[in-house]
Length: 330
Image (tube, rainbow, N blue to C red; front, side):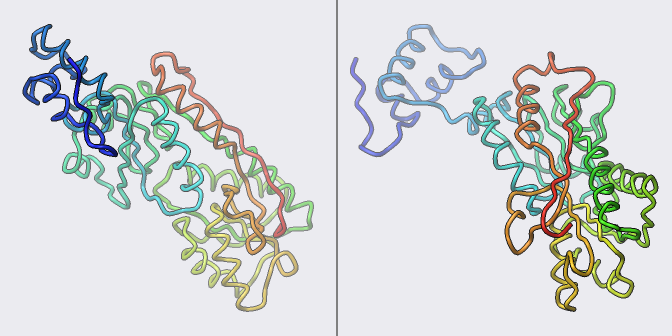
């Protein structure tokens, strides 16, 4: 049997395979299904031969959505807007696809009832769930996705889940010691979302590091990691500008820098400015912000190691170290 190829430039479809094999499209779906479904051996062989001759390959995402298969990886986030998100999630999604899996990116925003949100939007079985969102805990994610393969990246792991943690204490300590060495005696701290356990730990690390070297924290102003919240924070800092401003994201540091710049107060001449995340897109002339960063490729590699063999992932989890990166503002 010689299968008639589809029109030039057109990818072969299930209908093309069905015509070539002389069977109904439903038989093609059964024959190519990763699960055992009723189809005779003779028809299955005809379908496989036709598919090979036509060069037909199933779309793994479409198959996953249709069959609730284990080829899907749920990536649960709050937002996808900060510069640090762009630095991480683009290579992460590429890496997931390199394993032959497809990612479903689930953005929960400010939704605190994540269980209701997910029940109303998605109930597919997945190979694994990667949890970045502040609001999700491991138990509810396991129940919602019918999977024990849950990797927690938000500080909310439990005894049954795996975890990867970015060890921020070392980088923050290095940053604060650098500031003290530059003569900083007072500082303001601009923080991110209070709902985040990761942010809570980050704030604690700044407080401890400042206390250890004798830097007085004059104020703590809450934001949401965005440029806009940095602009707003600057208004509370401007009246009594300290020696340094520590921000828990580079985007907020950019907002602080621009807002204070409108009053002709610029780092490093008038104050020192430090961000967090050391985003690649922040390392350019307009925003040459001193920051704390980590090797994102190491984080992606750790996630891939988990996805390849969840049962072999270290019970102790994985810690990714941070480092201080000195740039023009500090």
